[in-house]
Amino acid sequence: TIREGYLVKKGTVLNSWKAVWVVLADDGIEFYKKKTDNNPKGMIPLKGATLTSPCQDFNKRMFVFKLSTTKKQDHFFQATHLEERELWVKDIKRAITCLQGGKRFARKSTRKSIRLPESVNLSELYVLMKDQDTGVKETKVEKDKKLFNHCFTGNSVIDWLISEGKVRNRSEGLVLATGLLNEGFLQPAGDISKMAAEGEAESVVLDQHDALYYFRLDVYVSNRGGTVVKWVVLSPYSKKGLGSVPGWGIWADSGFFCEGYSSDEDVIVKEEFRGAIVKQSLLVKQGHRRKNWKVRKFILRDDPAYLHYYDPAKGEDDPLGSIHLRGSVVTAVDYVPDAKKHDVEGNLFEIITSEEVHYYLQAATPEERNDWIKAIQVVSKSGK
Image 1 (tube, rainbow, N blue to C red):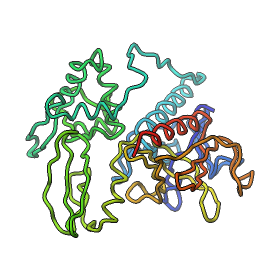
Image 2 (cartoon, rainbow, N blue to C red):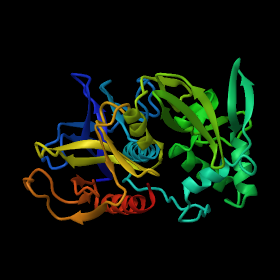
Image 3 (cartoon, helix red, strand yellow):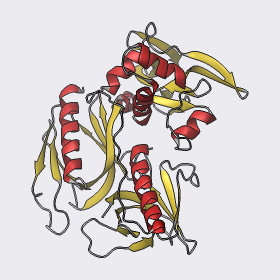
């Protein structure tokens, strides 16, 4: 086995998207309904296959790649984030190349001369970059008959990182900037930067004067007598009110207002999504009522500390639920009460909230379980 894990796959008959356990071998890809299943739902031969990434056949789905067989069958897979997709694509491409050349699969060395600090805090770096006096300077740019407000260029980001001593050279700057974009702190603006972010260029972030980017919009909302007042945080030291309009709510990352959030309850709920994304992947979760296990996409955010989970086949517009992590306890466990042994085994961990609600989750590997436990422990102590 070269690589294995959960991905979302488009069905070949019903065209519906479902999470499946995917196993990449030297000569093919097998996919299973569940990790514990012995018999695969299907097998895709890699000999003579072609890989398309990014695949833009689906407007509302990001991080999709397409595998086409010699029999003209197309198989579509979706990852949870850019880095995960690139890891799968890299290994599948190399497996196909090895088959064509009659060689055994072997990963190329990933050792690089680039040396970044092991404990880079992207959230702190993001705050420094947004400082109006000493951060990256935002400007107004007119390009291709479009006007971009509060944007900046890719090369200005790299210039700033070097001038502030955060990196030693432009190669290290691109690595760090890519991390900022992957975690949502930077947003691409304009066709050039958007195409690069989707993987159509050698680098996800472009060190160019014509590649434009935005900062993520940090928005909070207050409700005064039934009227929602919107604020955009431009820096940690200044706030600018965007006015008050009855019946309007959050200003989304796309730059458009969203209607229908005028109650205090709705305003409070939307605060959950203000935190920076710390970690995300597919995990298996036990339901509270039926005690059955289902694959869910989990997104961990800090400040405030929340873990949201979604149906991976339907996107991130509406979470199925959220776990407030402030003051919670997370530990690795060997078994789960009320769970049948054949349903789930291995790589289990438990979250107990401050209100003593128990959540049981399963990671794909022991390493992934440890990563999730460490990340949740940090967020639960530091986040609000």
